Amino acid sequence: MNNTVLASSFILTLLSTIGLVFFIKASVKDRTQNLKLIAEQEADSLLSQLKEYFSNRAYRLAAVDEAQNQLTFKGIVRPSWFLAFFLTLLAAIGTLCFGFALSMLVPKYGQYLIWLVLISPLAGIFYWQKSKRPEEVSLKLEGVFIEANKTKSLLSVTAHRDELKALQEALNLKSYKQSN
Image 1 (spheres, one colour):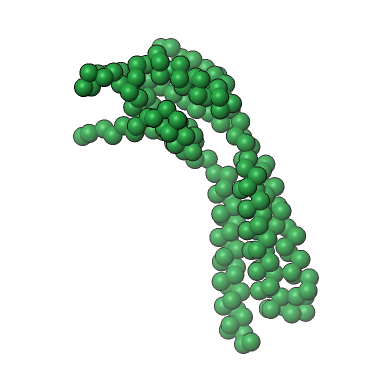
Image 2 (tube, rainbow, N blue to C red):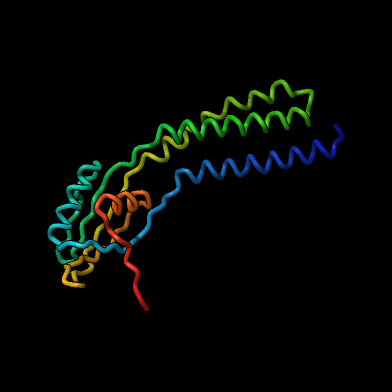
């Protein structure tokens, strides 16, 4: 093969490897969001449902601020075995490709560069250590109003985006869209 093809293949492989590193780093990024939700029930029954829901999901009630109508729950996020395995597999494929590209550029050391694949478990270890972290969910009752003879509660929730999605599905909460 000519040098132009080898160099361009190596550059593309290097760029893919850089993208893989950023993908692995993004797997542990904090994705906390604030969302306003509407529940079609009164505040007291909603708060008791929320307490039960979060205790079932291994959160504990950490703080109650009655003056602000705010509850704070804390829990530990468990890492995913599947994601740890998946990231390790992606890292193995990426380092293998990078090793092949390097071995074509430097054939003298090519047989040793393939062994770069042995560093791929570091991706799973990195994910496992960084993703097991304390998580906090903050709930604030913004208000109660009556619409079409139904009592509705407006709730502001700050939590991880996956937790927000699970909460909406479990308690049938709707997103609140403010009209300007």
